[in-house]
Image (cartoon, rainbow over all chains, first blue to last red; front, side, top):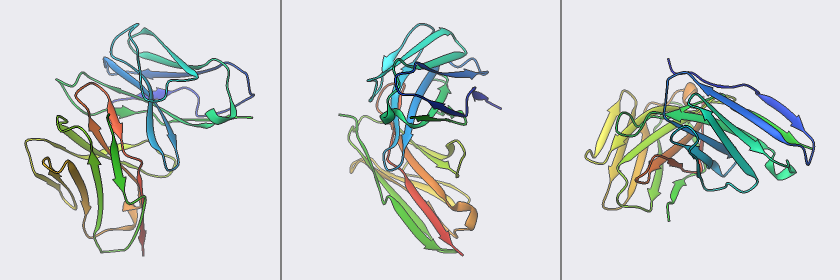
Length: 114
Length: 111
């Protein structure tokens, strides 16, 4: 069974704090993703990575950065958290499209910025 | 640009009736169309998918139909049951490695 683990399920941070959300997958997948989920807006892609040290902006990258130093780990960084970044963040991974099209999600991290 | 529209945003059906959710997309080159189900407090999980060389696919009570000419695809759930209550997302691969999702449909099954 594919396992995508997000280390923090629930976080409360103050405005201006630097926030790290960590994600680890155990299936040796090349692709990893960070989505943000908000009611009525669906899942919006923040950043994705198709290889170690590679990253591409998604649809809403402003205010976020990412790090992929190892294949199994993809971190989302909020350099200076703001209240409009209160949301649920979903990490996901997948093999390259030539092998399989399915992406696998983690359990999600609920972030509240006060 | 890459756009996926999903309707309706909420849907309530009597238990045993059918539910239909529709999505339209912008890029005719797209070739893979999955549907995800997200139960309350849980992660989205793939329930069915369809590729562009197929017009319909069924898996027990769920089916997906694809009209490539019109650029829309639909999820059909028959004989609905309480455990079908969830948020459903359609998604599209726009010719690269990333999935773009619709805005979701909250389906409520009324006992």
